[in-house]
Image 1 (cartoon, chains in turn yellow, orange, purple, green):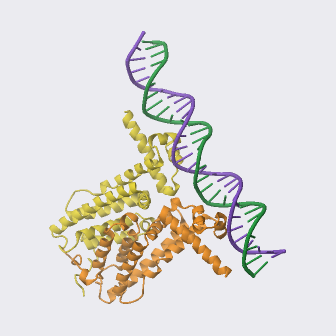
Image 2: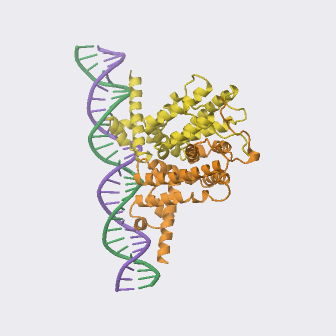
Image 3: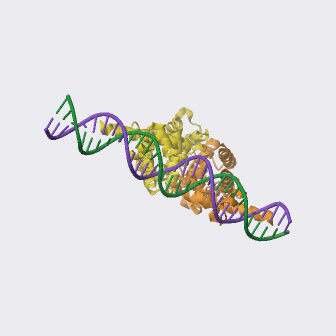
Length: 203
Length: 203
DNA sequence: CCGATTCAATCAAGTGTTTAATTGACCGCT
DNA sequence: AGCGGTCAATTAAACACTTGATTGAATCGG
């Protein structure tokens, strides 16, 4: 049990640090506050995480893990695409702190190779999963074979990532952007459909 | 001259602070370093900017001003759209620090109403300019009339904003995403064209 | 000489991290 | 059962250093 209890406490500390970052940003992350949030002494925190950096690495993994549920392998590729878009949107709306933490991590990755590695890895996996879905959608005839699945996947990742930024996520515009994306991908719910995109070769 | 010299010095300090944020983030912005970067004493900085916050506000305006050149009112709406997409991309590639600073400001806006106001205002103006361009493109028959210009504008803003994040901007994927956007908008350079997107009403 | 600028020195309030000590459960030994 | 010993877990107290901000004297152009 000591092993499990140890892991529990680590989780407690990580979650407290996560909340701190969501509330006050990296700028405002104080080890003392994290310890106080769990109700332990500051030295206890350093007993589990030798440095502040180690604690942050714990937060990175925790935050990334929150996205594991957004890709459910049910239904057709088109269904999976639509469900993924909506699951991410829902997750970010229900847990606004997640977007903030992700944004902070994203920025820090410019200066911290360790975090950059984790982020890069996560984004790569995401991109490839999307590309796989798109390819299968093409194979099933749901998307025209001329599209570059790599580029479309990149656009989807970019649009969803932009949702994590506070200025955009708090505005109804993000929903609009994703709705438009659904239309161009041909996965929007029929009754909500309005225009389907650009006709091929208009000039 | 005293008036102009005074403004010069303020600019020097703001630019130094801007560089600091780009290099070390908000987290690592130190007034001493800013002063040292210009070669003046810390008290001199406080003479021009009473508080650190005042200095940051200066940085916000400076950063936002960098985007004023990306919307040139020449050519057809389609030309302007294409040129805008490419100008933003070019600006962010040539000046990587700008993306970082923008990202930092974006995050800070979640906690700082003053910055949030400026950002919101800037994004709104941007969105509306894009929507205007799209509407004129529709009027000229370059885009089909069924598209929701508001939603497309939102998607463009989201995609370009995502470019400011380090993890994405450093990857060739961002270029891919924007290329795909150009195709769907029907403004991509002909010889670079590959697939044009989703045919209308594929089901 | 005078007001605008600049500076060295200093301050109070934190900052992450470490140290030395305490607690209590668990162990083999008598 | 009683006893010392070990060990993980926790703590109060400080350490060494940094931070934004202030001050009073010095400097310089007009």
